[in-house]
Length: 375
Image (cartoon, rainbow, N blue to C red; front, side):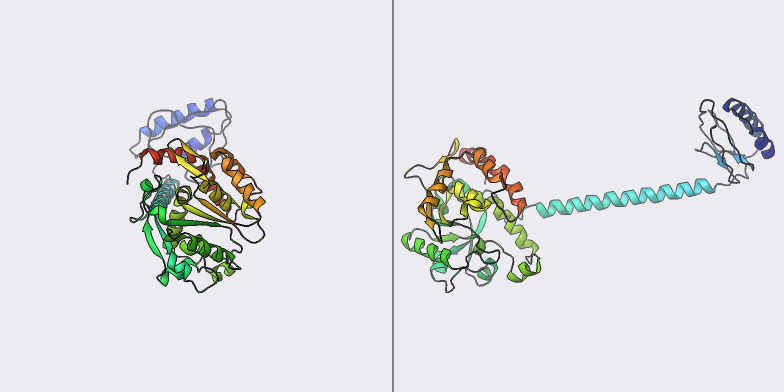
């Protein structure tokens, strides 16, 4: 029978092959052999090619050859047939095995991605102690600043481990009303003079001490290098981070909330000639010169100002007046100004993160002043 099929398929058109094929199937159905089911479609007027040997049809395939013969352009259309028992099922078995392997591989990939996404979400989730409406910050007591024996403030981890820092939660409900702990906190805005040593000459600490002596009502100081987890000198030199996962998470949480302190606390600006060329200092200075209201922010008027500007190094009164003029910019205007490439930032991601926040300062302040947030 196989020889008959092989010879009858040596035709030139689909029509001829289809007729011969149907005849062959009818003959095979009269036998007692078990046959597989197959669904077939016939392309129009496509020539057939055979290379000898026995040609068989297996389940789900248009053409299967037990001896490796390839038949193209013809498949069985409709109905069910039985295959010759001598037909080798290798192709089907291999196909099933490959399909199972691919399915398992796909399932493993999906499972891996889901676990990875869950880990990312867990890592991004604020720790239980963090309350966005009562953010906790490390602060330096005024006595620690005034009594420091070095010409510059130490790195946060060193001060923390020597128990010179206190960690206090600042109620933003109270802060935006100008009440509570915020009244006794001084936020320092300064330019880092070196990536490892922000106050190389000690001029910043000297100006800070003088300001504290003139303002006994200030009980705590926030100075970024001393109050947020920082990389060590060795980590800087080796190009690594060096901070623990907990420290990096803490740093990011505080960084995201620091603008609210510049908008509500008393601020000491240590102004040098490069202050207005840096992203963070310019943003900090603008926030410090604003007055929060139920409608958003506006430039602070006489008697409302929370900021003190002290010129250090080569800064002059002209530099001070140029900075103060920036207070008149709207949130959109200052956001566009900060986005300019001539406003430098060490980590470019900081601009990506902070510019949308700065641009929506009015909306944020209106929400905070309306008491829409809950504690």
